[in-house]
Length: 189
Ligand code: 5GP
Image (cartoon, rainbow, N blue to C red; front, side, top):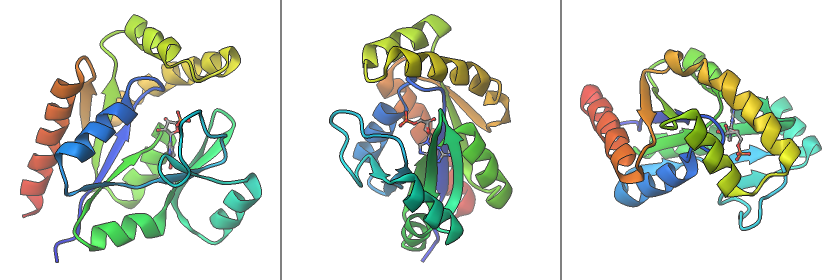
């Protein structure tokens, strides 16, 4: 069986990556999302092992020591990582795997797997990004401020991504990402 693709999606906090990925998975049944591990607290409504596998710092560090992560990084004081076995299992079953990871994680994946597909999602404007961050309302003012600072830094990494997609409209942006994925599928066949 043909090994599945690895699709890396990054972008500043609040840009709408979760919504885009949710929609992508609905419309493309060969895609599978690799649920990451994190030490951050669940947001209201987030389900364990659905949004994230929520871990203590001790558990996370033990997993790092056991080489369980394909990549891992610290974002806003919390650890986040991609489980190597989840990605490998899905890809070996021929499924195309979507990762939603920050720019540091993407950098590690780029070194390990340069043939992955790298997509950076941006907002139509800085004002619109700020509006979406506030609208989400899930972060404390302090958290929001540090996420904004990180977002500013992350934007400077957009140029390192093969594809930059503007999330101006969910359906349009999903259509553009689907086209990128279709092109990548054609390249490997
Ligand atoms: P959030 O706390 O908003 O869910 O995620 C914060 C940041 O961590 C986002 O940029 C998200 O893409 C990133 N992230 C989520 N999972 C992972 C992961 O497994 N690895 C890395 N490096 N970043 C992740």
